[in-house]
Length: 338
Ligand SMILES: Cc1cc2nc3c(=O)[nH]c(=O)nc-3n(C[C@H](O)[C@H](O)[C@H](O)COP(=O)(O)OP(=O)(O)OC[C@H]3O[C@@H](n4cnc5c(N)ncnc54)[C@H](O)[C@@H]3O)c2cc1C
Image 1 (cartoon, rainbow, N blue to C red):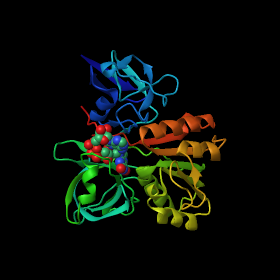
Image 2: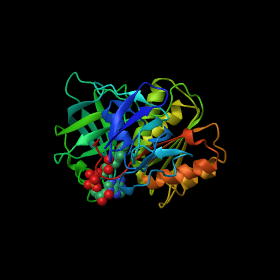
Image 3: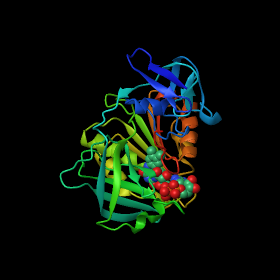
Image 4: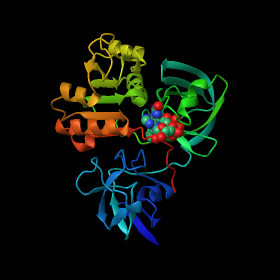
C-alpha cells in the first residue's frame, strides 16, 4: 500500500510504500531531510507531523530522547495514512553533488595504538567537494559500506584524511593498519548534513569522544581558514592520554585562536602527561565546566552512549534542543536507502 507524503508549506509531494521509512522515501524522491545514522539512534532526523499518522517499522520506537514534543524519527517510521511533514529543514538533493572515486592510499600512520590516520588521494584532476563535518562511505567488496568523517578541511580537496579507530574483529577497521601507499579504496562522498550555521556567532562547544575528533578537526580547521573566530571550546575525551592522538593540531588552534579553549578529559588513565586534564567522561567535563549553556551551540560526536550522555548534560545546563547537533558513530554497516 502506498501513501502520499507532502512537506508543509512547500509544493512537494512523493509516495511512500508501507514499511518504507519516511526518510528513505524522501531521499529517493530527491528531497534531503536532516539525517545521520538512519538507525533511530542519533536523532538528527527528528521532525514533526503537521497531519496524518505514522507507525514504527517492524514495531520500532519512533521517538528517542532527541525528539521534542510532537516529533518523530523519520528514519524509523512509515505512514499509515497520507502524511504532511514539518521537518526542521529540507532541501532538494543535487544528484551531481555526490561522487564515487577510486582513491589511492597516500600515507597511513598510527597516531595512537588503535587509531590510523589514513590519507587518501583522488585521481589526478578530481576534487572532493564536501562541507566540514560531512562524511564519506567506503564501499567494501561484499557491497556493504562503512562511514568515516573527513578530518581535513574542504579547502584541501585533492584528497581526504580519515581517523579510523581499529575495532577489534571489525571487518574493515581492524584491517586498516595494513593498508600501504598505492592501495586503493572505493569511496563515495559527501554524506551528512552539517547543522552548524555559518552566520551564527554564538559560542560553540565541541564535545568529541575518541575519533569523534575527526569531523571536529575539519570544522575547526575550516573556521580558521575562513577566519571565523567565534569563541570555541573543545572537550575531547579518551580513556587514556594516548587516545588524544593529535595534540599538535590542538596546540596550533591554541596558539592561533585567543578565544579557543581545550579541555582534555581522561576517564581511566593517569592525567599527569596531559596538562590540565579533567579526570572523568566528557559529559562530566561538560557539566563541570558549563553550568549554563543557553546562548551556546553544542556539537557532539562519538559513540551513541556518549552522545546520549552529553545531550542530557547539555539539556540540564539549559541548552535549547535545537542547539544540540550530533554526529553519532553508529557501529556496523551503514544502512542504504531501500
Ligand atoms: C556517520 C558516521 C561517521 C563515522 N565516522 C567514523 C570515523 O571518523 N572514525 C571511526 O573510527 N569510525 C567512524 N564511524 C564508525 C565506522 O563507520 C564503523 O562502524 C567502524 O569503523 C567499524 O567498522 P568495522 O567494519 O571495522 O566493524 P564491523 O565489522 O561493522 O563490526 C564488527 C563488530 O564490532 C562492533 N562495532 C563496530 N563499530 C564499533 C565501535 N565503534 N565501537 C564498538 N563496537 C563496534 C559491531 O557491532 C560488530 O559487532 C562512523 C560511523 C558513522 C555512522
